Length: 393
Image 1 (cartoon, one colour):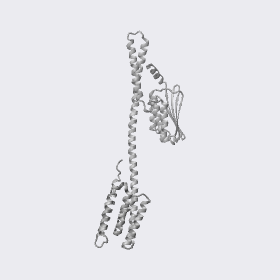
Image 2: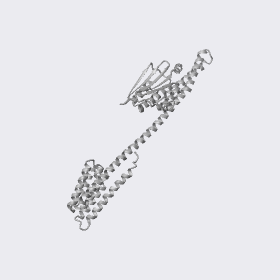
Image 3: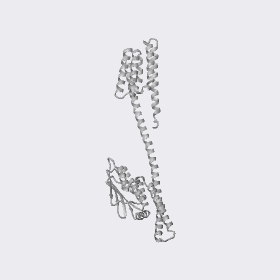
Image 4: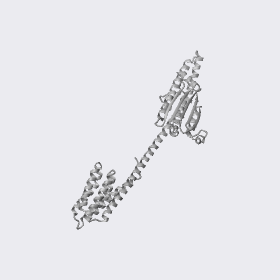
């Protein structure tokens, strides 16, 4: 929690109230002990006790009602012995309005105003000033208190917005760091798959072919040992690639990862559905990672912008291709966004770049009530990898 920029204002108001009460008490005390005053000793004692109780109020935080009652009783006693004590009602007005809930605070102010008018009139005689003075004082106190409360609410709301902004900034920074880490992990996994894993797989296949082609070769034992070593290192490399795979795929199949994405997007205003068509099969890790990332981006766009109440993800396995369709019944994509660049918006351009990086294709259809993002990846590259895995076993 950061200090509010209005904190000095509130501090100044509190200090001003303390100075006001002290000054009014001093005026009452001086006038109460002047020659001819009816009860100088009682006035001095009550003023001293009143100020002592007032300034020890911070230790009465758990007993505010009792503290206010005690101050009010002391003030009533002062009004009886010193008519000028009605001036102290101005300070009490602020305490009532600040520490009591409505409508009790307004009723307390009204009662104190009536007591002030009656007390002054009975002891000093009735006059227009004796009536208007306390009434104006009460009105001014109510106006200032209402302004103070409005200022306090505004300050609290501003502080809440500042805290939310700081929390959002911290969350955004953390998400950016996480996205950077995940992106780097995915890039490393792809690089390892395309270089080290493929190289080890080729070495293994070549050694296997040499082993089968020359069963009587004098170095057959060394060839077999080299092939087994390559197979072991290929298995270790594949485990490393799996550890670097996107978190959404960890320990899950592609369909399960997509199901989790749908479940996270589901809400009172949006119904989601995942449909898997065809016989599921294990795809190359880069392709599965690309499908998960594309699904995350497309679903996020639907949640943020589409104003849809229904979204369906369809994962289709065919003999030579795999397709992912993200369809919603929202307001559609603005044609100006689609025409801004050859790839559309930045999000669509990022998806298209990811698709093209894996040799796939992407199409976007959009009109009010129907938007479909379709990506397709060929599966020819999956066959050699499955053969490699079989050879590695």
